[in-house]
Length: 253
Image 1 (cartoon, helix red, strand yellow):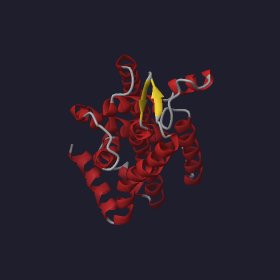
Image 2 (cartoon, rainbow, N blue to C red):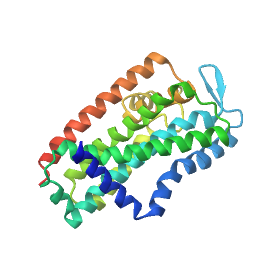
Image 3 (cartoon, rainbow, N blue to C red):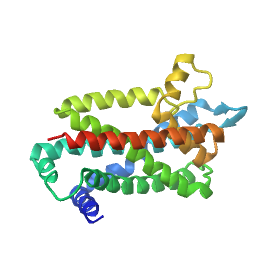
């Protein structure tokens, strides 16, 4: 555990040197919710119709904000491998008396703590400014969902960070994948009446699994059985991604 905490402390020291970066991390989900949520809520007027009920777009979009924040945090943290590789500290880390798993766990533990703070600020804003009714009794599960989402995407993206040597190639590939995954998911809109190919793509998309789970936990939208299945699928995605990331890191030198 000491090795993991040492990596966490290093991440904290790096982030502390740039207060603007820290502020940006905290502000991004709030900007998502205010800019997209409020604008689309006004544009739709009467809101969305789901399962015969009308709901505000802000209420629907809240889970999308949380899932996008987890994905964005994972991108930022995985990109740090390129910085470490460029200055040589990445290869030095691999010589330290710690396992590859401990190294990855230290990296993601710090980012998960950041994600929990982001989640708390977003939920408070959603209630105080947008008057969204949150299911506070599920708050521990919401926090667990945010942590698992950040970890799952970080391990998944770390695989590509270890395999790709050029940071511009990594940025291009990951950002293209990010936008494709977002628009083939339930992040921005429900897919009940979408074309069959889009519904199938969304159903196979881990971002949909994560978003639907958070949507059910935060505002109660969705069928419990379906959401439970999606949560299990995302848990499997996290475990497989972690295993592959460790295996890839072992061959990184």
